[in-house]
Image (cartoon, rainbow, N blue to C red; front, side, top):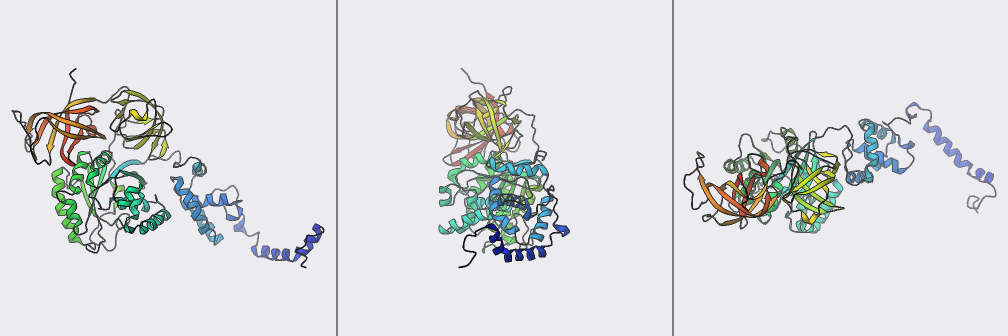
Length: 562
């Protein structure tokens, strides 16, 4: 029987048996050269923690996550995924691997180290160094005809900017393949519910965000299907910048652009919602029928420009065309070799280079509500149009005049103490029930309330209507995030499109392509401002039978007669 298998009578005896192993260890230690200079670590240094000094796997993985992503602004989902993936890659080749790590870790300031350790406690909160300057917030809405590739481009951008892990996308790809829909997997990053994934059509406005060197972008992924245009209007009303996605594939561009297509309607609605700058992405350029052809690109451009001009965009200043492929990610972040004729910047760098938006934070607080739900209190979502909001501030919910208090503020799922105009916010409110709020209500300062009422005078352009419109005509009014039934109670005068002159007599009716001033009356009380005072809350669209009939601006609010 092997003496090592039996229990020893005394520990001395055990030592004798193990002697040969000790010899091996000694020789291994001799080879290691413990006294060599590079291996005398300074334990207090933050820059370089050699792997043999770390006590447990938990510390090892933590530094793995830090080394991998030198950026302190990282969501916890990212950190967790990295923890699973990175340490294994760093372990082989202890010396050089360690040195490589050293360079990356040096960039991380001490505060970030402390911040990072706290991250896992609070889910979905990005740790920011205390002195980090706030990046400018820009809201980008993706619009265009159904199946042009809006969600796919959104998903691809999130992947390219590191907001979605590769493993998550691989999982989506597998699931999409099982449903024989392998080209849809990128859009699943934004189309999250089952119905949207099964049909491959966006229904609600998807939200996500990504960052570049200078700016923080919120993606609003609008639905392209004509049944969901009301949702798209809500999305466009929160945007500063619109990206019109058109498909270059033979036949698809034509269907999107013709009378029944959504390309025209969406561009027009975006203009009405107050989007000043439009980027047109000519998508699917890698398609075999197109193959990055300049002729096809120019053909799409020639058809679109006159229409966009008619809607009110200035082709020289407000519009920028660029070719891309959402599925392969070509020309979104890096230029494409196969496309020699396009010399401009790719999409993400172009967004980064756009001039800053002028927003005044000293105006009155105006936050139109997009959505609300219950979650440990009443939570509302919306974009802060003007003014600034801070924690524990007292505000008034119009038109109900409820006084509410802000319990907490989340800007793109990151908790903050105050918010500036243009940010997409989630507010937890105290003093109001979720049932008492409707989309379209507005949060205001106590000392500067927004106007509310039912009757107003407005200038309207009739865009598409087969017959004539007379007083008594009913339609659906979309103004900022509010949707309400409205009736045209009187036509006041016609306006000449070229000269702007008003007719002396009252018209009995108006028809397509005419401009008129009319008095409108809504079914319920709504919040609105005149276009002159506050453009974001003074623009509106009128829709009927699933079509956009007219766009307009509020000229005057009419006091209610008791």
